Length: 123
Image (cartoon, rainbow, N blue to C red; front, side, top):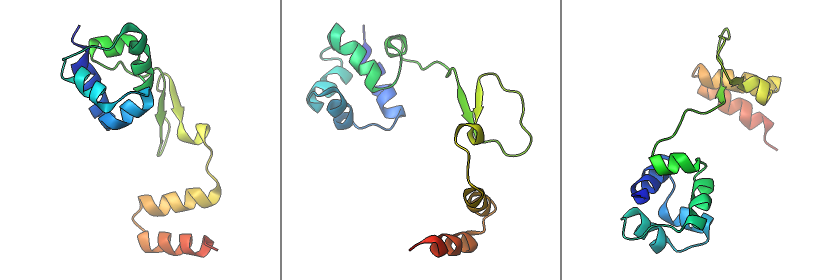
């Protein structure tokens, strides 16, 4: 089982440093490096912890690929389309009217106005 290459690929795709993964697993970064170079392999007890630390399934870790998420979050602009297993951002985390106004300024490139508005809100 050449799991080291899969650990590295997933870790790099998530922009996680070896040291960060090692910290999450309470091990040394030399151990992570040893796995990724296929010098050693994690024991079976560590396998599940690695998958959890990388937020992937054990099968994804074994096969080296990430399956499509069961649920996706969409920041919808304009009319909503029917998308299977989708959660729209405004349903998940409703924005206040001030937040919507600031977001609209950002999206339309009104940066000076955006900065001025934010500065008004600062104590």
